[in-house]
Image 1 (cartoon, rainbow, N blue to C red):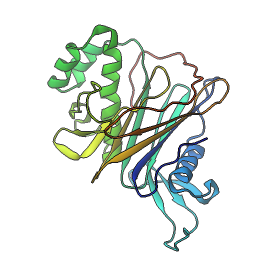
Image 2: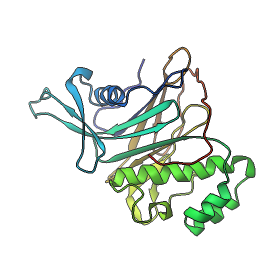
Image 3: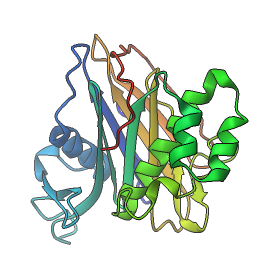
Length: 249
């Protein structure tokens, strides 16, 4: 049973889909499903297209009950081994990115690609969690770039992110750009998930639905900015084999 967004709230609906065979679910189907859940309309009403910048969009093919005409919902997609993650938000631009946690030379990569302040922060973290912390910063940069519609162009890897140390609200302002927020909702074991929103004017709710596992059971979690606490009902999750390289999407 899905935990639906609350009407009238600025809500990001995130759907994580995959199966035990290492095959990601079709992104278009997940985008339509997420938009339907977000807006409370039948999934069959939605069609998936592309924005001028190349990013995905989800548009209803019919007018709503109020006669306001078709609705276009900002959307974002991320793919990593065996999993596809989609995010939709009616309140404005959204970005999502995901990476499986894996061994990698975190300090060397951070020294090469990240802002010196971030590299220093990472060096001060516990070694046992350094790869995850590196990927939290990486996915945050990717998600913010998608929400802004510019990706990692113009020094996006050097764009500073709020330190993902677990303190404070779920979505936190990007340094120097307070209307852009980013955070890391809870996800499947081993999956690092980042969600970013732009044009924020108030609280944002994040709803995560997961269907990753042998039995296809959904794992539902509602996470609100300011709390960051997931209400997880069930978890039956398989991990995939992980590559060594870090890549964007």
